[in-house]
Image 1 (cartoon, helix red, strand yellow):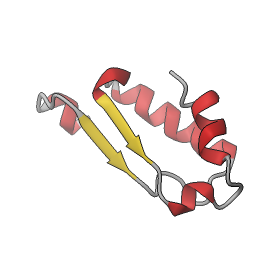
Image 2: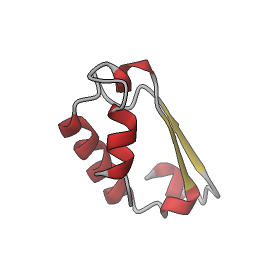
Image 3: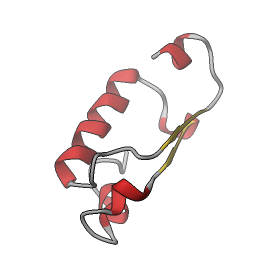
Image 4: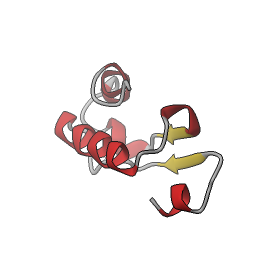
Length: 69
């Protein structure tokens, strides 16, 4: 929200984005990002190693699911 309110042109959020990559944690992340009202085209998410602890395709599933928008 601070970045948005300060007029940032683009926001990069680097991992770890979740504790261990459970689908529910990606859902919470998606909700937080939605509340921040940063347009998706102005946002880059970079996963960290924790975001893949649950499975090697956890990040792909998150992008196909709650982080898709």
